[in-house]
Image (cartoon, rainbow, N blue to C red; front, top):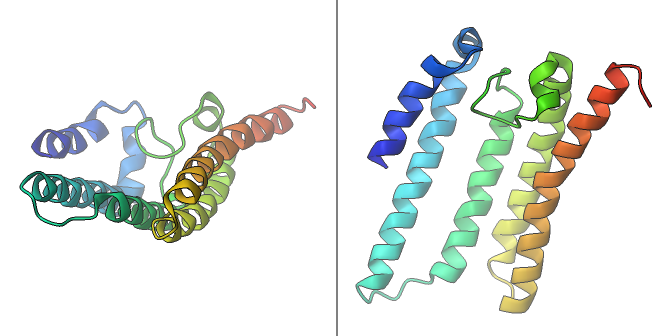
Length: 158
């Protein structure tokens, strides 16, 4: 967690598009802190379980991941083009318009997907596993494909 904190401090300085961070620095730190808090909670849950406390990690982690997705999805649309935070594909990085449209859709998918993940934590294990992994794949793949399609349209190619 300490290393991640250091990394979050260094990344904006390393980014070739570092000037954009000034436009979303508040959101950057909200996202960074949400990730750090999630990691800290996950750490406490794992240690508690290892020490013999009755912690239902198999239910709490998917719930936590879902809540993190909901939070991140709500702020994703406010992230300006950069190399380290957001949906970074060759196509989003080459076009601010593609970046914005992809992040608007990706943010909505993360909120919907996060809600599904959070609810799936309470389903029977076989249903949970299928729903969890299908949701993750959909939330990850659609924005990547969308960014390519939007970029091709922008280039005037079918």
